[in-house]
Image (cartoon, rainbow, N blue to C red):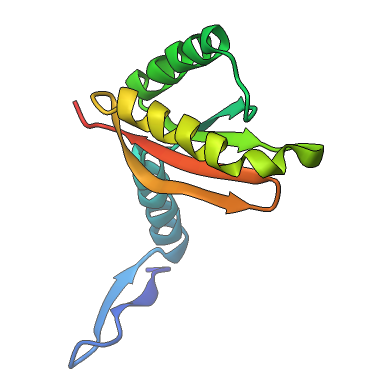
Length: 130
């Protein structure tokens, strides 16, 4: 009959086997995996960069973009970049990020509080479910 004996579940007792066309079986399995992969949600991460002495107008402009990103369902990575000797303003950077988190409270929730990594202070905000 030109069929193959395929072991379906080897852990069962007794093991389950079927007499089917192996190439067709592999094709169906790949098709099923591809369909599952297509349904999986892809998480996009958008970044917003601040300086430790970011002005109010610039802050508001970037906050508007952050709101748009969160409403579109993307995660937000907000960070303050300290260059040169500006690292002495760590507290200002943290205040800036906490202020942003507080103002974006209705659009998303803080996933990771501000944390200093090298010359960057990073904070992650995840969008709220609709």
